[in-house]
Image (cartoon, rainbow, N blue to C red; front, side, top):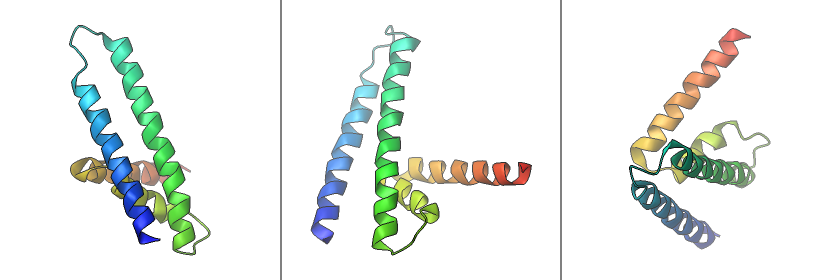
Length: 101
């Protein structure tokens, strides 16, 4: 089963690299609307990957909730510093939400 996860991670890594290359290739005169559309597609894709990876991790770990698995999925799917920033902002947002209730 470990080889299947490894192959999926390699495939996801290739998709991330391709998306980053595409974002860097957006010409400066393209405009905010098209660049915003590209970013929207990118974010939707990342969200779908996280949403599908977290329940898979919960199943592997025999847990009924995906609370900590979302954080693990983010760390698996996003590269280095971007993952750390996403986890930090996610933690801040959850803390702010729970304190406002």
